[in-house]
Image 1 (spheres, rainbow, N blue to C red):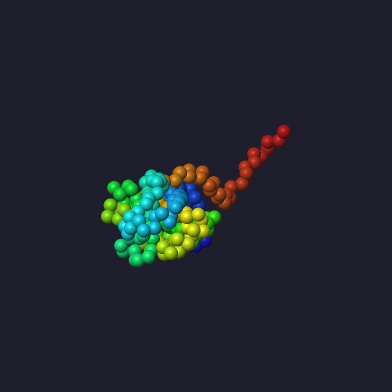
Image 2 (tube, rainbow, N blue to C red; image 1 turned 90 degrees about the vertical axis):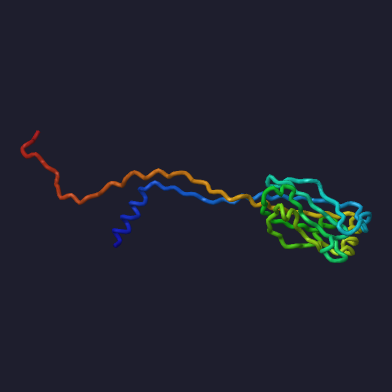
Length: 191
């Protein structure tokens, strides 16, 4: 049995070898959206928003929407924050967080990462109850009326498969045989 497995291993080593692997690319970036003079935005009205500039990650355009007085479904007393994909012609899988940074970049909110698909039916996702407005007022006052909404975004690309190089077969191993032949000597050949 040992000789059969040894023979199979030797035979497999002589065969050409190919391989492939599935790769799912990801593209990650951070965008900081600074809100200055927040006290001037208080009372802007429910469903009214301010937005960041457009930024690009993974070949798609994105914008952060901030609702100082919240959204209707967000609950009274909260500001809301959402990430919007401006490329809804195709589905885009992504993971992201939106967090509030206060004085000296100290993180005030800590949300778990959201993973979802942005599509033509759902172009923005986020946090209707991003932060209590009284807490937001206090954070902004500590930082001369401003704060930052930090977005950390990872776009998950389409998986693809790539082939890997061919490893040429090893040269055949010499076959050793037990030979019972002896060296022939010619008799009578003396010099």
